[in-house]
Length: 361
Image (cartoon, rainbow, N blue to C red):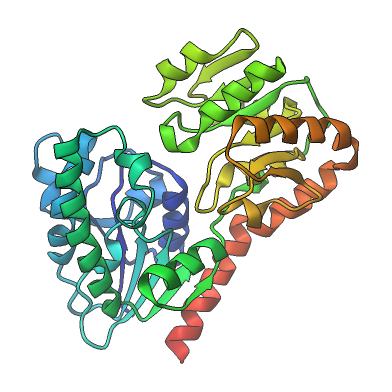
């Protein structure tokens, strides 16, 4: 079979690229189509694929400012010639599922989410724009939603990364979806008995992650909090943090593992489509204190963490206090066992079985 893999863009190894890496292992002879490729930004497994990029690759400043070219994305993804391919596997959180599919080809879309900025979270992405710029963006997104709906006709089968995303696919696209959770490399993480009496946040420091809630809550609690990550909100967050809060910036995998192993618990204040960080913390035997929405509801159980209902400082403060009272009831074995449900091996096997089943059918 001739296989095409379509991925939005290759600019770094995030959660979507960890999934893509498995797709490339399953189909090493496939052609990988992507809007743009920043060479050296992804793993060797992906870099060694036969990669074809769109015309966006040659536009000025695209590697750093590719999101500014959003209105061109549909045209760019439709420009790929997929004639002759029998299977198209799209890995999509933006426009990858909109590639033109040849007649009689099977198209399976692994969907991380319907476009977040087009269908939801407008204020989180564009809330600080001026009035005229907001009007322009609103018009572009209206057109983008119409295009996004039309391209659903190209997809034979949707796979969502969580029940949360399955529900979004039905809400916005009116399509059924199966669910296969994305992979977390739990094998590189070890269960730890250490507890150095600090709480941990691991996150990009951008507005929609709501790290500000964690910082303000721990300002009030006066408990040690370590914040790992960087982003355009870092200066603002440092400005409101008191002395009990430490910023570590970006860290490599070894140091990150060390933070997981030594913390008392992970704080997860944002709403994520899935959220790999809480699974990584649990793989180290650590409980999680999380906002009760999105993927966290599927990756954290009552035996492995505490939820706070409202995305507010007061609600998080109360959750931390509850955790302090009940923390002896959480075991590292329960956390680790829960994390193993999301292992890379489980993901690879389920994706393989799903695709083979649809091909055979």
